[in-house]
Image (cartoon, rainbow, N blue to C red; front, side):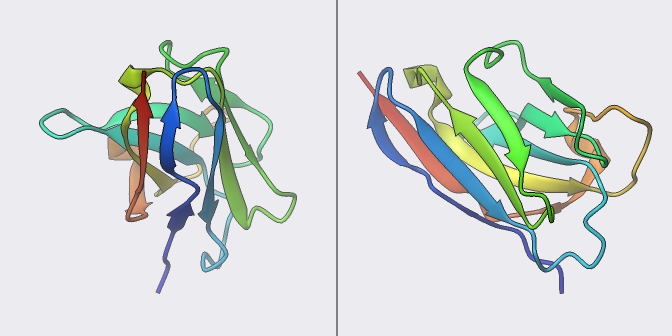
Length: 127
């Protein structure tokens, strides 16, 4: 059974950095787009960053561009989200996800494109 497992969340202060990790090693075929999403209670899940199935194209939500970076190891077993200059509005449960289709050379920040999800890791940023 495919299982994605996030780790690395925590409670930090404004301006701090965190690196989130997602173990995707249980995926038999890891050549699919992956992404990070976040969600706060009462709001829709928001796409934060994605990486295409090759691993050479990324995309980011406007709210995190220049502060967050998505990456993966060469074997595509671990997906990372490196975050800098964290703000209170970045507080959320962060989820990693794998897409259902390879698609084109780009990736999507829409949750409908992803069918495999982790349980999430909480990030709390306080001032």
